[in-house]
Image (cartoon, rainbow, N blue to C red; front, side, top):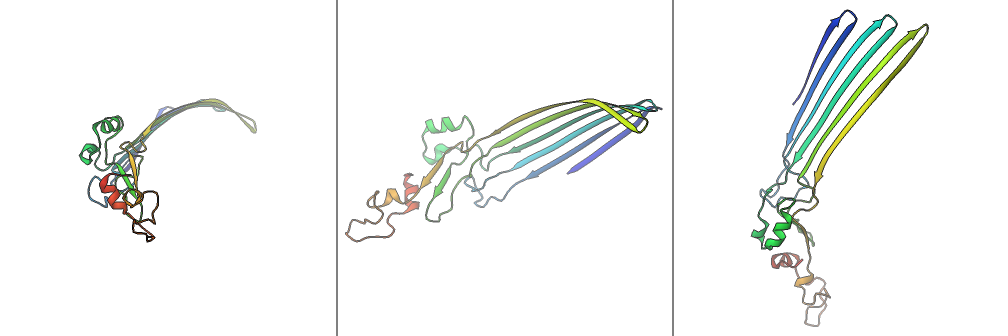
Amino acid sequence: YHGDARVAYQLTSNNRAFARFSKYVDSSVPINGYGNEAAKTGSGPQYATATSVSLDDTWTIRPNLLAEFRYGLSRYTVDRTAFGQGFDISSLGLPGSFKAVAAREALLFPTFNQSDGYSALGMSGYVPYSSYNTGHDATASLILVKGHHNFKVGANFRKFFVNFYQYGQPSGEFQFDRSWTQYNPNDATDNGGGTAVAKAGHTFASMLLGLP
């Protein structure tokens, strides 16, 4: 949803101010093609917000002299998790030492890439992801009208805070092909029978054996 609100107020005959507030909230969940933790996608459930606040005070010091003060605050946040985050990778036969290292960042289904046209398993990487960014902007200006000329002086202050983290492959990425299930791991055309074979071994068999 998206909402805006603004309030304006005449403080005195020569001083007026306004304030504005805006809020945007969005959540999304991509398709989980496998319906389980091994979903192959580059994203995951996401929740994002955008908030902004604006304050303005204008003071007419005299008919030809104007002072203006402005302040703005903006904040954007996004949190994206992986499908099946917290998955116990030791249930796949990976050692406890491997799990302990992965747990320092995030536990999720590892990425298993397979050659020969097989679909990959696990997230394609860069989740979980969080970003919390805040910006402050303050401006003060003085405007003098003199004859046909306008003279303006002022100052502007900006401060930005960027807080961000994103993991590549926190639970590992494994590549599987037919090499380890060929008769000769170094020669895909050798089937041991003296006859050349265009494609020996099997990618899926390599994965089931845990031989990347």
